[in-house]
Length: 272
View 1 (cartoon, rainbow, N blue to C red):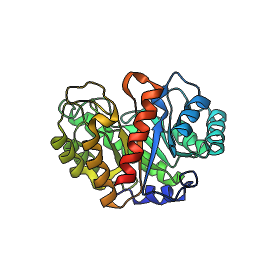
View 2: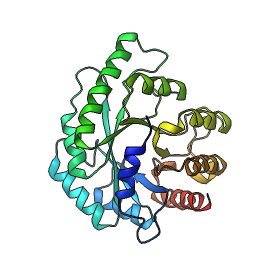
View 3: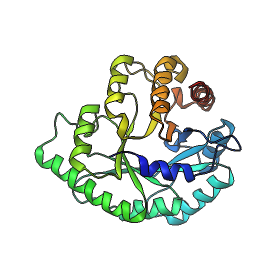
């Protein structure tokens, strides 16, 4: 289970606005600015010099609204940006409906769908709940593969991807190459433990959500954890697989802080 298929799609997307293509594309998750309209999110991404957008399904591109998805796709392309992924709030488990998000991803031109690995953390999940998540993931894998899409699991607490170890075990149980995982720094860990977890699941990382939280959970400018992000980017570059690194949430939801974080991320990627 490696992100090779997603990488091939990644390479086919537009290059960075006239610059040479990068191994790592830096971008934005639209959920960072949920209250803003699509056109403003695009303006912020362009002004920050970003390359790619993960459009969220909760506000900007609702599942089932294919007209909106097509319009967002067109506006994104006109701005010189790529659509990297469709960030959905599908929670794997019983009675999942995948049709609207698959249709939405295709209309949006997103090569990848992000979903959640259930609603229960790995320490509390029952065997039946876990089996339901695995079965649901396998069903999604078959449908996504038929549609030419890849799938990334949100790496997040309150789900079966709440730790690197649990994520690795879940991916082994699902055992479908089309499904891999996102990654972001888990809350409450220092740099060493954070990087050790990344090292464990790095072969399966399909995209990265870049945010900056202190080990105690306080929001910081991205540059405040520059050493961590330099180490993360160095690992991604050494791996040699094209990967999206997407800014997700910023201190005080501030567009000016977002611009600073984008500049810091760009400098880190360029310096790798």
